[in-house]
Structure formats: structure tokens, C-alpha cells
Amino acid sequence: MKTDDYAYELPGELIAHMPSPEREGSRLMVLKRPDGGSDGVIEHSEFRRIAEYLKPGDLVVVNDTRVIKARLRGKKKQTGGAVELLLLKPVSSGKWESLVSPSRRLQPGTEIVIGDRFECRVLERLDGAKRVVEFSDDVGTVLAEAGKVPLPPYIKREPEEIDLERYQTVYAEKEGSVAAPTAGLHFSETLLDELREMGIGIARLTLHVGIGTFLPVKTDDPREHEMEPEYFEIDADCCRALNTTRSSGGRVLAVGTTSVRTLETVAERMEGQEFAPRSGWTHKFILPPYGFKAVDALITNFHLPRSTLLMLVCAFAGREFILDAYREAIERRYRFFSYGDAMLIL
Image (cartoon, rainbow, N blue to C red; front, side, top):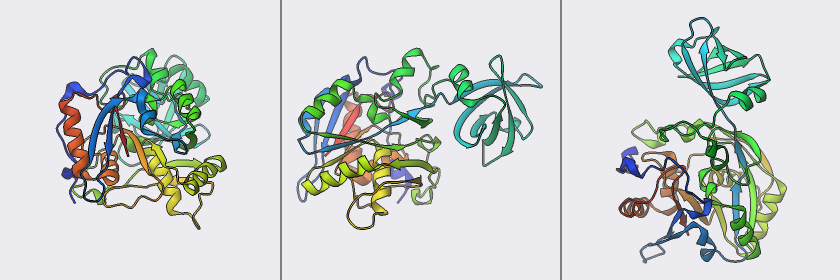
């Protein structure tokens, strides 16, 4: 197995830099996986018509994490040199693990001024460009007044007012992510209500998306890649919905790779045949070959080449089938990545 097995060439103009005018207005590629001796089928639709592919008794599982305004810009107190921080996760009160730039010049003891009145100090050097940073003010206040939406690096523009709403799912609730669970960006409240009226369940879990979503696989063999840990929670209501769906023969449709990784993390730790509430940290890395235990269908976006996310999708539907679908998406001018179009894999 090689990381280059998951490479493809994408024209730069197909990277979506802005969201579609309406959440459910994105295009939808529908993949029906190969079954026995039959080939897979690819269909083309719109996300607003996704209900046509679902049925009563199905359960749609979403990730209700909320993106924080984790990107901060400031300057070194002594020299005035420009500094950028991406807050990753809290360490303790007022202390955060952060990705910093320029990392070589931000050593322990460096004081940073953010905006007109906030300050922080580098406490500890971690791996690579990571540092532990301590704030002298309430971090929530700092982010509310000086933080920016942490758009991914392939979106080549500054965050705008629209991103405060659109780089967030309509069901986002629990703060903690530095990147959006982007498959969920296509759902509107109206579309969710339509699914409920059809008898399709909506269940919530939480996985706080970390910096690992941006990190490329740098090893030649992807099995040597180490995933960044991410915190997850799955409560009693979600478990009850999952167990009811499984016992009644319904399908579990995961919205996004974050939901897949959470469900599969919990499934592999199950005692017996039923889901039970659980929380903790997951390093789950799904790549071919993999036997899925919890997920029957997947709603996802189009992912970066050589990424752990693309490998997960290939594990679910087959590498050749997925890469064929990506080639067709490029030919048909689908929009790629966070603000791009969607794929439903059945």
C-alpha cells in the first residue's frame, strides 16, 4: 500500500472558495456500491433531493460540534513582528495548545499582543510548530473579540461575514472544533424537517475536529501515519436511536467522516451488540481494508488527494470505484473540498 495510490489531479479552479447560495443547493453525486458481481452505479442529483434516496426507518447521524473562532493574529511584544496562532485544544484554564507561525521565532517566554488589549505568552514548545500558550485574559472573550473563522488553507481568502454562518452546521451546538464537519454544511432546517416528516431519524454525536483534518499523509506507506487525537461524545439518546434502527433493519447513514470515525470507534469497543454511551479520545484511522461495523451509508464531501479522509471513503466504497467517481466529478465540474459539493454512498 502506498500513499500515492490515493492521488489524483485536481484543477485549481474546482476548489470551492465560497459556499453555494443555498445550503441544500449543492450538487449531489450518488454512488451505489458494487454488489457481488455487479458494477457500481454513479448518479447525479442535487442535495435538496437527497430524501429520494432515503426511506422511513433510516437514521441520519450528524456531528453537532461547533467551530470556534480559533485563528488569532497579533505581534511580538518586543519586536512588533507579525504572529499567527491557531488554537487547537485547551490544556488547562487559560492555557491552550496552539499552532504558531512563524514557529522558529516563537520560543518559550515570547510575549504576544493580540488586537488592542489582549496578551498571551508562549509557555512550552511541543512538536513542530505547536506551542502551549497562556492567555492573561478570558479566552472566550479573546476569541469573541479578536478571533477569526479558521478557514482551511486551500481557501485563498480572508474570512468574511458569511463564513460566521456558513462555515457552521445549522445544528452546531458544542464548541470545540477548529474545522467544520463539512458534509453537514449542506443541511438546512427545512431539509432536516422534511426527513423527519418522512419517518427518518436524526441523531447527534460529537467529535471536535482537530488539526489532523488539514495534515497531509507524509509517509510513503499510509499505515505509518499517526492520527491526531480528537475528543468525542456519544450520549444515551444517540445510542438508543442507533440500537432501535439496527434492530428494526433500518440503515445508519453517517454525515461526514467525523461521524463515521466516532461510530466505528464506539462500535469496536462495544460489549455485546448494542451501542452504549461513551466519551474520550480517538486516534481512529480507517483505510483499506476495513470491515465497517456501524455505518451502512455515508454522506461526505470531495476530499484532498493523499488525505486520510479520502482513504476512509475508499475503505467504504472501494479505491477504484471512488477514484473513478472523482474523475467523473472533475469532468462534470463538481466543486471540491469544504465549501464544495456532496457525495452520497449507498
